[in-house]
Length: 159
Image (cartoon, rainbow, N blue to C red):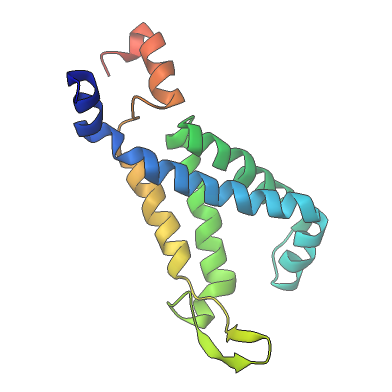
């Protein structure tokens, strides 16, 4: 193996890239699903669980998940996006998932159509929050827009 390839493969700062891509993809996929159904449909759900200004919150959540997820995937603005994305997860835990316990998979039984699952707990929300915290506490990987932007700004090189 060439020395350059070995250095890329062994560099600790690259280990965060798969986590960043997966966390970002998850948010972008959920944001896209809300966008494709129309945030108005999500607003109806938000209204039913007592969220004030449901249409505004639906649009804000949808766009934040979609655009924020894409940004996380490419490593752009990771630090400032972690808090609002974590707030979405915390709100989902408190308003939806907490009542169903921890587990994200609840086997209810078998039917003629296959396996039936029960309501989803807060396990996946905690995994997303943990991933976001990990990304926030990590330096930008070389394969990220944040690293590229930092390298182009001479005042940030000493930080």
